[in-house]
Length: 127
Image (cartoon, rainbow, N blue to C red):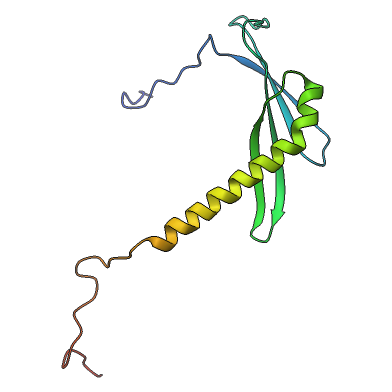
């Protein structure tokens, strides 16, 4: 089978690799720790460990997944900042929804050319 030359050539950055570790209480959410590693899989102490969180909130419109960064240096620090990070991510999601709703409400709908015939006296025909 020949490969399509128009498809993108996607490769991993060997200098930007992380090992992902997942922690969960199976109730409130998930905490991810991304440990920087070298191309041979050894820890890379020259880069910072990254933390992120994920949770789901039940809303009237259904389940809302939230994913967010946590500014922390250690796992206990990330655990302590989880709740505040959830609240910040939720506030940002609410603000984005309000902005989307505001933009949608201000759009002007213009019918496409040829969509509806012009209306006027004598233009309607009764069956």
